[in-house]
Image (cartoon, rainbow, N blue to C red; front, side, top):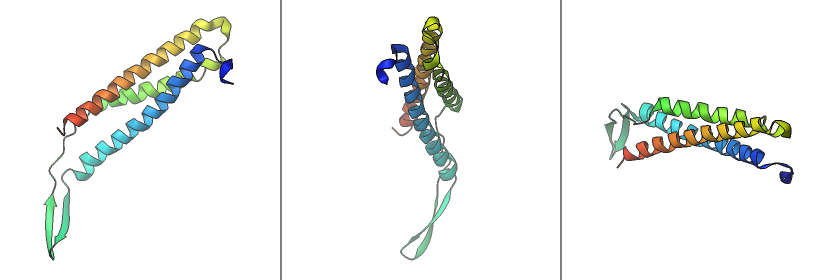
Length: 128
């Protein structure tokens, strides 16, 4: 079945698959950030040590994540997936629309990938 697709359809399918995978990575990153900032920040944990109760207070945690950029990355990935849906059914007579959709989809994916990589690098820089 794969040999029936032209290059633009294969590109669109590849970008859609990568976009869905990046959405899962982004969801993991956001859940980890939420857990670190809200669950651990200002937390007070009581730990028994040699029969005595010891209270451990965690300080507030600041995460250098640009949530506005991550929100835009999520939107760009969703739009990239949605734009890829009609590409296989577009006729060869209007190939310009197929090419245009594939190029826009690839651009949105590149923007989202850049945003996610920059957020991860900022996140890692916090610990070094």
